[in-house]
Length: 289
Image (cartoon, rainbow, N blue to C red; front, top):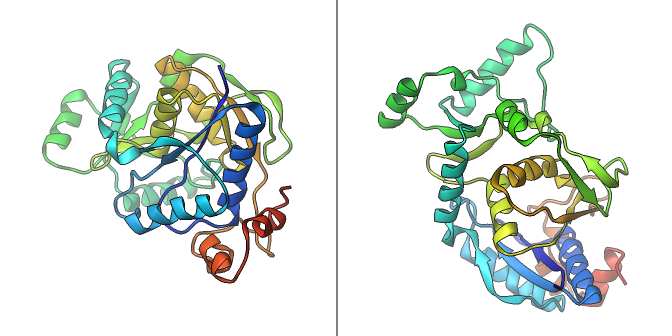
């Protein structure tokens, strides 16, 4: 079977040079290997995703000379698939609702840090400090029924105990040059959020489900998602899903060495196009032939 690649942007802003690098790299690798390229729209956040940004994605990619298979998978149209996946994890006793607000969590972290350093995940966010998984089933049910907002969290220690040691094949490299067969370390993320009361999924959950459903064999994405692969491999193991090959690539940064942001107009593809840049110019700017 030919390899299957995917480019999966979120329509919460205009694409920039960093997105162009990832999209073109996926396109070039698919074409060179006789594979397929899929486009997925990761629009699970209705407060930030907008139709005009989605339309701009199609325009920018076409301008770059990228073609993809139809139909495009839009995550907002498949929320039921994510709910069913959550039910499978719940049946294994691996998720629980946490009822603390973001303000509650920040307060708990300050209390913990008064006693010493509190661990943080690879993105720099503090690990979940709450004790919601110690609540009884009746207490949890009562809070849910009363309408208290909640986040569904993965019981990381229980999940790791069930899954065992995990690894993945890295054909690119991580932030520190990591490559080859790498050992996964999902514990560094703590009890990650897999869904919320108002949104029955999260990035971690939906990307794992979609890659499996779409038959993605090669995940090519930025090095900023390197550490998230540990969580994805854990979920794949728990759900009996296939393991793709991963290729994490360098990030396109600004003059200060910071990762590009969608809020920076100067690197937005539509802005560069309006200034007269060509698709070939974009390839030159990001170091692709």
